Image (cartoon, rainbow, N blue to C red; front, side, top):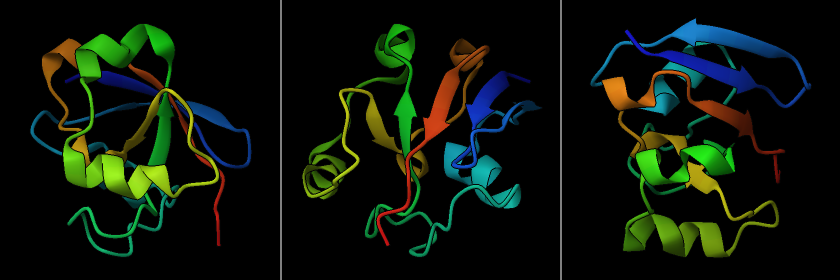
Length: 104
């Protein structure tokens, strides 16, 4: 079970054990840290997170649909990803991320 290190919008940090196969969105939504309005269908960007640079290779690059949504985000950074599009696997044990500020 990979351990994910999160800093939420309030600036609070915590670590959470995450089941493989789930998306990061599932873990963050359960804790109330992202809205995930579209339920994970890559249609809203309300699960926007910033992956720390040292983890970008393991997480991988966004696909074209995700990239298109992120292009319109005021909070976009080099490590921006939609949490709904990142599947948890054992290679992500120790992953560090920050939940992006709400744009609403």
